[in-house]
Length: 194
Image 1 (tube, rainbow, N blue to C red):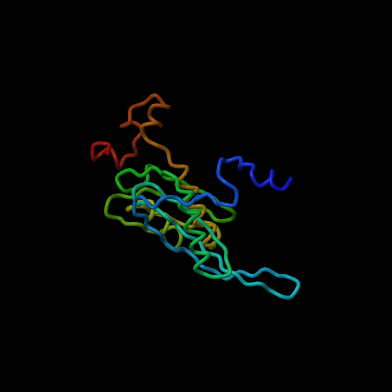
Image 2 (image 1 turned 60 degrees about the vertical axis):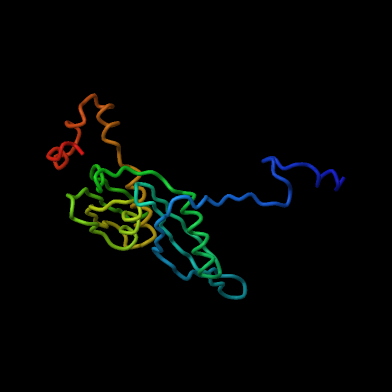
């Protein structure tokens, strides 16, 4: 009976006892930023067990960004886990001429973040995890304000949620039945709609 069990192939087609390589390929060069490393404690029978939690942002500076969190007993292991998760969770966002297409407010837990487009040359007016997410995504000009809690973790997740809410101007114009010029904000109309 045991021989039959060992010879049976796995459901995913791979041989037993070997792990599949789920790590993403290191194709393009990615911008990796450590947002936060904190020591966390788990209360157990004999006292406390300490570990480290790392929050990492990974982006290609061209509109793709991912966020990952990892916990481990050693800092380097937590950072490695978080980086792998961030690479797997990369998402495409809308970036127009180095800024975001429209104003957006996003919430995660008790943290709220306001993101506003800015004219060229303004820079990224943000701090902490908000700045890390925006710069890794390739946003060069943006105004931000943290409105809720001061937690780095929650404000970073709220920023990513805000970037995911951004709409494509061409798709929005098509859905409304208007031209791109009519839907575009006033600061884009002066430079030919781009």
